[in-house]
Length: 222
Length: 217
Image (cartoon, rainbow over all chains, first blue to last red):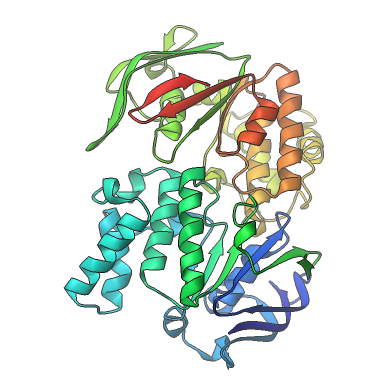
């Protein structure tokens, strides 16, 4: 389980508190939905839950964020990334490779999979996300919605036990949102723990629990 | 102002987008543009702005080919909110960001700071005017970029997925801001998948279908 316990956070020593005494658990086989106004700290919370804060971005964290009981601060980022897949709000920050195909394969190569394994996962991923038609296209030439699909497909292909999706589908059209809903339902059945930040209420029906982040506190939405 | 696309074709390498596209926009209209991912909505906006050159055909603003108008002049007349609006922030503070276009034009207008502050207030922008742009949330950054477009008082806006980063309250607030702009005679091309938002704001609807065919809906 990915857990934040009594989490208090501020960006700088004398800065204002962004959260105070916040508790949240992302459980295997469950989808947790996170909502909240712009600036409420949803992205910051996502970055703490995948340890980008404080490993990459500095901040002052009190409380405990742990993965199956092990504090994230004691784990190297490379190990955390083997457990948690993250799709950020801005897909341009996660696209590196010259083609869609290479982008999906990049993560698989880093897992040292065999070529037949990579080929199978690549073809399934391209099919599941409807990306066959642009498999040889440069992601930088793709539309915003396509970029978000490519990033999520690349993250999903790595088959991590936990997924953190920070408004990762904000530019995706309704038909592809339906495709993603189907995939998220499948990943949930596989036992993945999934956190979805979404303003568009596109994934409400999938959620096992939903929270709103407001004034530094999490309020459960019934 | 009128925007006219005449028999425009455009392709990215190995990926055709438009073939003989014709479109006429009266810049007092508010137009909603929809279509599936990758159909060319953003590309159409970039063609109008002159960011991308068509391979064939012509694009004119008031009968003057866009290619012969300097980009700064197009930018003065048409405010463009990019899908990835973070690439539109240049300055370190909120206020500096709003003053940036005037610095570029070397214009020191009296009361400009007060005007910027009033605009921020009218947009319900909560962070302090001296706040760092780096610490803003995505929604706040988007609102700041919108403010930096409106401060120059363009006569037309092209807004690419303006609600994508916004919560429902911010979306409602944006709708009110744009309705005020519309009432003031500012036309818009609003690219979005949010049909509820478009229905509330727009007078005319266009959809780009497979093969780059533009259809009135």
